[in-house]
Image (cartoon, rainbow, N blue to C red; front, top):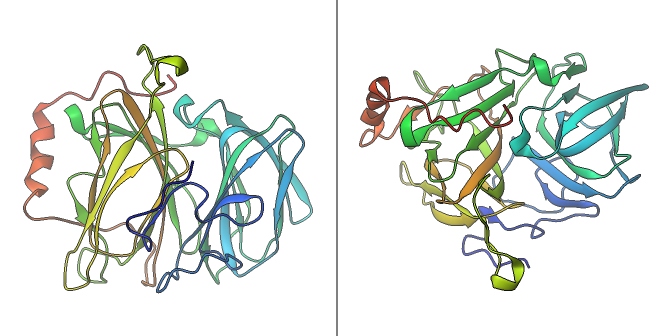
Length: 307
């Protein structure tokens, strides 16, 4: 069931920004979900039955195809690419495909699954690249209950692209990620201005005895916080579940909180108007000191996912 959003401009529960076969369609050259002031990033997510496909026309945007569950074939620019996927986002990295600018694409799954296409308006042409899952840089970031796992397949160090920065983050049950709260909302020394999309999935943590449906079942959820860093108003403290999206146009954001009992995943899509493609951030000065405490703490032994 789709819940109404208490933050209709920035929070989109599953199916509230649907378009055709896409249950998420935000940004992008042909999205019908208009968000005032949103200009630099886009995301589409679809759930495909066996043999089904989705297609996008060529546009002045670069794209990256990310299997969330299942495997897919992508046809683009006269070539076909087989993306080895995964059982779920918590099963480890996946193949992804960067298609560059001005290329149409069709995504088909023989067995069915869920697929995301991240996008950003772009002008410079970079070659199509099939990133194999064994090539995806996996980073364990933070420590203690701030430990999380990052798949850096679309970051500047891993992928040649024009505008966007794309990665995915997995947070074990009870941990906080996207923390300390930070921002990237202005072009200044040590900071770049980047819009950011968070697309979430959640699950009951492995090994926990989840209640059966006749006992009420489980409600795998997490929370996302965004708050103002200057005079521009924003105040989000949202429950999130599989298929939900939170937009971060500006402001301090974090933590993303995995509730006890439930693991959290999010796909991040970032891009902005700045001169350089780089993730440069400023910590909330009240909380940045927390990074120093990680030097003496161990990484959560539940990581990595999909080992």
